[in-house]
Image (cartoon, rainbow, N blue to C red; front, top):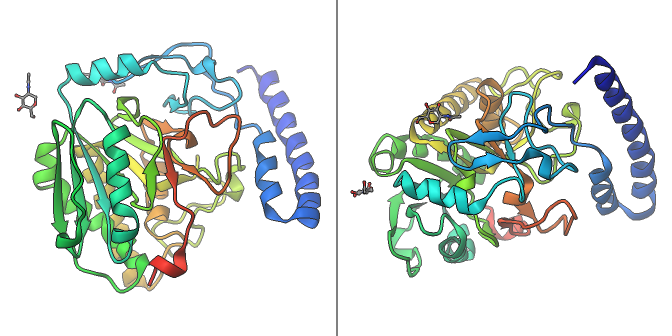
Length: 340
Ligand SMILES: *[C@@H]1O[C@H](CO)[C@@H](O)[C@H](O)[C@H]1NC(C)=O
Ligand SMILES: *[C@@H]1O[C@H](CO)[C@@H](O)[C@H](O)[C@H]1NC(C)=O
């Protein structure tokens, strides 16, 4: 981009921020929060500096970042942001089959999350997750005998790993990083080439295929992908290992989906588990628990691929024109029921 473009861009952004602020305040006064959520789509996400060039990728073949001009399709460090329409699913499928890949999918189903969400998560994963590839599910739970029997397709297996029950859900989510690290250093790490780690309180609603694969993969958070960097809910308390100064942070990533090669995920989980231990020793807890630490990690080591919110959408926001085909939908939160 030329200097003039950049300047133009900065003005455009300020202009939209002001409009949004006005409309947002008005909306808030008149209708409450949901209206403000609908207005944020007007805030531009930024432009991809590489948008006129085809990006290529070892898993998706040629990407067409210009095919979705209304959204941001690459990051400042050149990683693609995968939106519907910028890749060819058939090419991604063919490349993944040629590489004879095994994909791991880990999910924690602890306490009431097991009965409430696991069966639907697994059943819909059978319909949509990496169909046609070898998949090994790893279910982490304190009650292996309660894991539902789901009919698995050819080349797909399910393993159950026992974990201890933590007292608070925050601890479950933070303990997850340590457990994942152990699993990645053991059988899961030997069995799988690439692994996705997902939250259980969501279900698949569209094809989640090999276009999502990369050395390291982060998920844009459906609630925050239009927000300016300074408003993103990073941990800002310098006492926490997850802290990012106010002028830092690229995107806010959702811990409900992250993935990558076994080696990359071992580094990620080791970093997060260590940072969580350090916080505990200091008596602090990051604002969004393991998600805060994940965001710090991806700030330090940029993800090779970013998934658009189409990959993990919130039904609470409702439909949006720029969200073509949600691949995962998170459940409406019923914290009172499932958290303890
Ligand atoms: C693609 O794969 C090749 C060989 O496996 C590797 O050397 C290269 O770094 C990969 N490129 C990207 C962008 O990951
Ligand atoms: C593909 O991978 C599987 C499991 O890792 C292995 O058993 C099989 O021999 C491989 N097939 C080819 C053609 O390499």
